[in-house]
View (cartoon, rainbow, N blue to C red):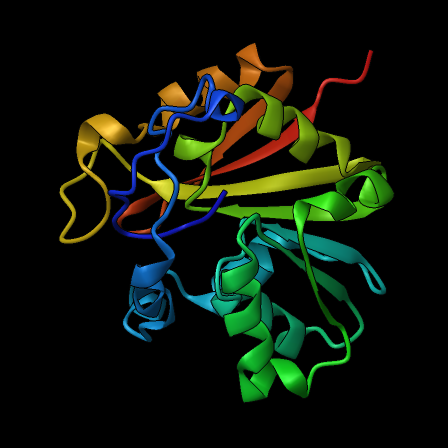
Length: 208
């Protein structure tokens, strides 16, 4: 559960069943997540605008990694509680060690054991570079975090464009394939304007 340009650490993990690329990110490559050049094609201000956060909202950054983008959202919106969720404790330790993170009272690192307590509380969920490696169970857990009026912004590597970075094309989705997977898993999904190397989807669980 984590966004990164390259993933090569293979695991046999049934919890990732259904993922396009079920490899777990190798935490030894975490420095790549803090590369400031990522902001050139993933502008934080555009991500904040896409989230359209209500005042006093709760945002869950699902698969935050080292918290690069969670920090930027928390800085831009001090009124918002940003829960930086990741499955790897070593990633969250790197996040906590950052001076910027230490200064943000509204940034809350969290492991997946916090998911039950967060269900139904998130006004927004950010899923950045994670959809292609999320198993079906994790995708369902992600949706369970949302309030009735909440939504998820999925931003992920686009298989339909030439890219100088990111996983191979056959490891990721194009926007239509991504939307189809979300629809199959019980979401309604809207394709938004893409970024240079990423598609953008806004999705909501279909409430029965």
